[in-house]
Image 1: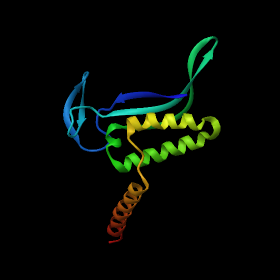
Image 2: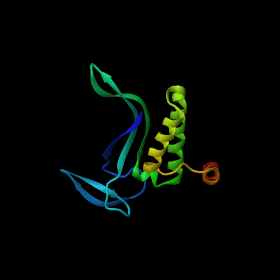
Image 3: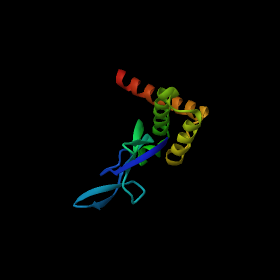
Length: 141
């Protein structure tokens, strides 16, 4: 069992400001601010090898996550992504072993970064409450 990666370039970044205008085929695209690269959307798909009529094929197990490079650069989005991945892996239950789960998480860490610690999660939660509290106060006025 392993993670299969699929990617595609986005015309505009999902998060953050647009950077330079780039030529992408006949159309134009924009880079992420501060870089000269387009934003890339990644899909992580859990597959296993199987033989069908004597030929090796990949059997789809689960869609783990979809994210962009611009999203991974934002700690709150990274936390949201890891929460979704953990939920997805938990829902697979006994279909994957502990060893497989550790290997899968190690591969994801290389692409996404480490999951946030408890202290980082608490800090993100405080910041979110503070921001939402300010929004609620504004809407009441």
